[in-house]
Image 1 (cartoon, rainbow, N blue to C red):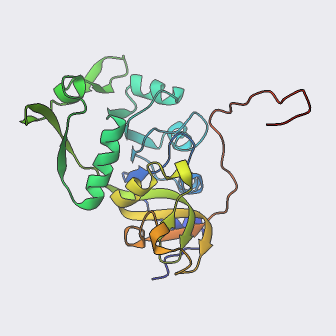
Image 2: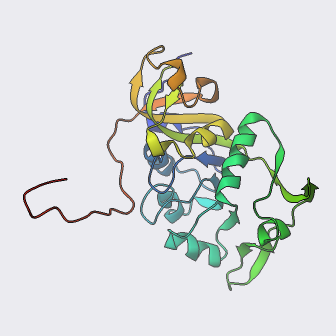
Length: 256
């Protein structure tokens, strides 16, 4: 039952080239940065990533993207990464765009063993009708587009059929984890992490704090250890802020 491994490098050692990865995080919040950095050093390539976004230009999944390790991404937002745009429009990266809530439910469904579900999101758009560019060639011409999806009506409302997502590996970051793999996420850093953890066939969790089994109250567990195969303690260092916004301090000598 002790799922703790000694290092991030050991945790990702068997991720092979061509693997698919479900990765937690939203922007730079809750991203498994230590596992991603270890995977960069490990050298696996031709990766497919499933995540809210594909990192930023110099951090998170962006480091794998800049290194040419990712060849396909399934994401809901790709606007914060100039290198992704360059690779996509030059035919070096396949991009499957999916609405954010639909992406979350596709991961959850995959983790629950539900093969597909109907949602009204995307009906009447290219999400349902097809035609979203997936791949360009080197000249910037579209060579592959998304396929039309099944539409069905329930109680007079149209819904589109979306398929579940699973991955060879899930990479997540938690604030606290125990040796059995039970995880607790901090506030908004929870985001896509439980869903990515559920969808991975082998889920690896980096945790800021490692505790003993029984120290986490059962009602406080966000992702049960049944979904987690490996745990590595990484500490709190290394986290960054994607866009820092501040306000001037008061000049009256009084602070709010």
